[in-house]
Length: 109
Figure 1 (cartoon, rainbow, N blue to C red):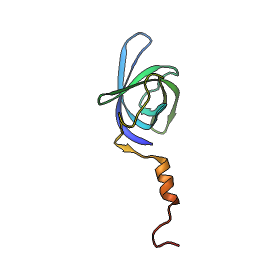
Figure 2: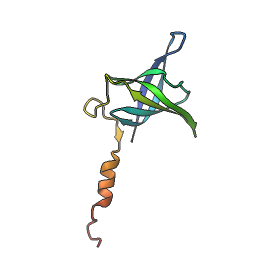
Figure 3: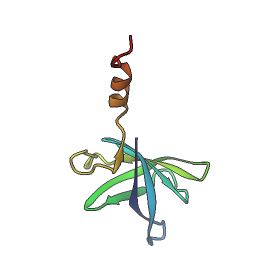
Figure 4: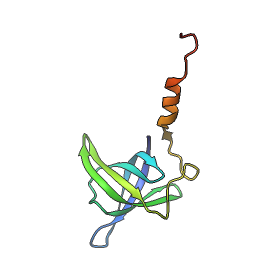
């Protein structure tokens, strides 16, 4: 789980290039979840850009919840996300959080 602003780019069926700023909600080596102001069709190819890193993928789900559209992106086989290349500002690893919750607390028996 994470939170960071990214640039999202895609082409319309007419061939016109489109882009918007989105909120990166979650990322893994195989895909990501974005929150956008507008929906994107299933299967739409897009590119997520953050600084010098570009990740390509396609929309695998899209639904409206609360204040925006949640877009699932499956990365292409050629380019997967790597923590070494791109580390979001606010990245929470649930495994580390779970490990902390199972550790004994000091002074608690």
